[in-house]
Amino acid sequence: MKEDLFGETIEEKIDKIIRDYWIIIDDYTITQDCSIDVKGNVIFPPHLHYIKEIPLVFNEVNGNFNCRGQSLITLRNSPRIVRGDFDCSLNQLIDLQYCPDIVNGIFSFDDNLQSLNNGYKSVDFNSVYVSTTFLGDKLPTIVTENKELLNTVLKYHNYYDVYDSCGVFNDENYKGLIDDIKNGLV
Image (cartoon, rainbow, N blue to C red; front, side, top):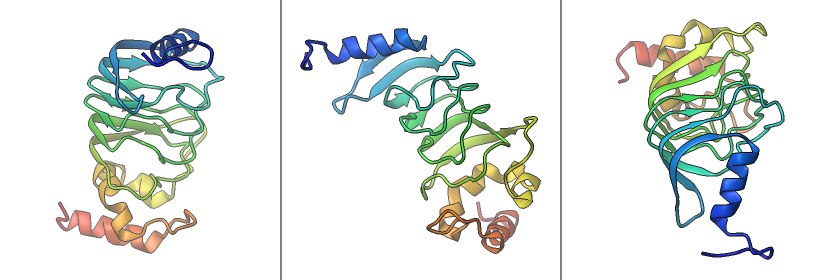
């Protein structure tokens, strides 16, 4: 086991973070790149308003990943793969950058999000759910009017240049994507 300058192992550091943030985490292993694979669920207790970023680097979670109700401003360190549900609703997220690549269950976020931009990557979500908050929709109307298509939209939007390099939404390209989905893109 490698130790840092203070004699602490990686395992000890991870266990300390889990305790300090009250994270409920099932059995985990540390990968070669020091990210974490979890056999089971990861649950952050609700309303720990000091968490702005996921404090551990996750790789794969074989259950659900719930970071709902924190004060996250980024999804950095999210797992690449979630075999269950991924819930990041009720946070302070602006976009979906650093979201997982694959979610086999439901990918949940809320309508406080300002952009679907996920770092221009193709993702594979079984289902997408957008919860309604008291803050109101910040997403473009065409997005909220077509919520039922979001799992396909998030898979293909980077091929349609829905967001330019500055993150500006292109309404016409989004309409083209929606039309193609409705006409059998998948």
